[in-house]
Amino acid sequence: MTVLHLADEGEAADFAAFLARLIHYDRGAAVRLQTTGKTLAVFGRPPSFEVLAIRAVRLAKPYENGLEARLDVTVSAGELLESVDEAAATAEVPAAVTGPPWAGVLPPRGGWRPRPGLPAMDALRATVAAAVGEFRSRTEELAPEQRTRVALDRIGREIWSRTLGDTELPVRALHAAQSLGFLRPVPQASDSEPPALLSSGTWLRLRTPFGSIAVRRAGLGALDVSVR
Image (cartoon, rainbow, N blue to C red; front, side, top):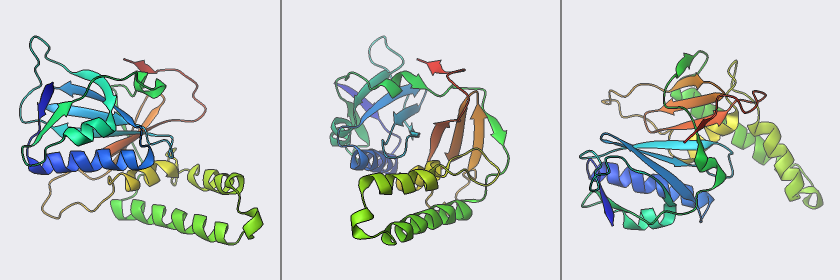
């Protein structure tokens, strides 16, 4: 069994929390793992949001497994979570699984350019709160016999498909970031960079100190897809 040595107990705890949040939305969730130097990139796709979540996990040392100097595998998120030992800051890599279609189409590694118009962290959280409040109020206004799954999905699509201000970022990307713990307050003593909106090809990426949300921009077809 391949063992990953995480940077410290805190990194292990954050990693476990991220996996637990993914499993909350999909008990059978899979994640794709890729290592580069002392960083483990974890890709997941919570189905409720139609976005790609990316969590960079710091490693205590570069990955190595015999002659293999790089890890690239898709595994069960649940099995990976069970293997995380927070006290020892380790995680065992489970056996590979047949990856879902999204695992074969990832955002590009480079070429990311800053995009203007992203509000500050507090404003991002306020936008999510307002959208959640609107969804609740509009559904509560429906008569009981009208509160069907089709009606709720229609309201949800209308709200979460809106774009943020003058950007092309759908509000559902903010909702996903909030739900996965990416929009939590940054400690005042932290030297982390503020949230940023980036683009590369057909992809938009909301980057925060705790993780990223990537989404394909509407209307751009299947161009510039990075298949790895």
